[in-house]
Length: 256
Image (cartoon, rainbow, N blue to C red; front, side):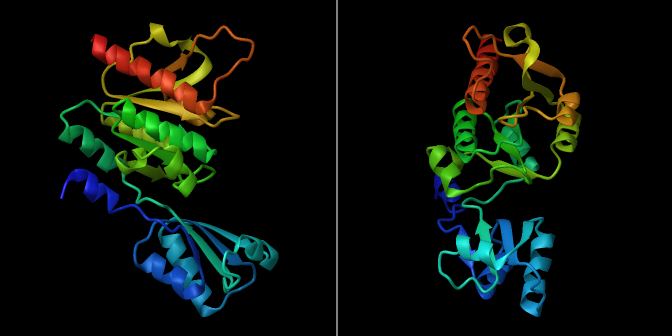
């Protein structure tokens, strides 16, 4: 079986899971559950078991009203619990580094600091694949996760590009710097990207669509890059900015 087929085996088609037994079995089977909605005030044994499993997996748990559960239910039989599973199995940061080592290449990773729009996330994963990046790292909270919309927007790239989910982006950047990576983040107040040395083992950090890269993450970056623009508006869409910077990295690697 080829590598592509092996990767495809990790793809899940159904991400909406309702009912106590179904949700609990999904956790115990190792399905990657991104979000769990639980009826507020419900504390019986099965619910406690589900919440306990969710905490083990660092799943986001929201206690909500019955009206909220009813509004997101697809079956009308949620039994006080609804889970949203990722459509694709998450990798680890080490998996991404291992992919670079396997290819005998210097690591090239995308780090996304709070990208919330699933279409932006999917487009960035597509760009990461086409620019030769070894993987994408996203934030576990307050971020778009691997939903069907992300899968569609990636145009299939999600099948080939590892995505790791971490709880602390700044800490992850610090740890990767110990592995020899340099980090550049996108910010319109930075140095023009053409004037920066973007070769070698590198991480490209793209921030939230509205607020940009957070202060703590920016402080961990070695370089801050701006994209020269001459239009009437002052910023690019996050996925477009990621593409422009990614292919400047590619250009410099080729030129080197």
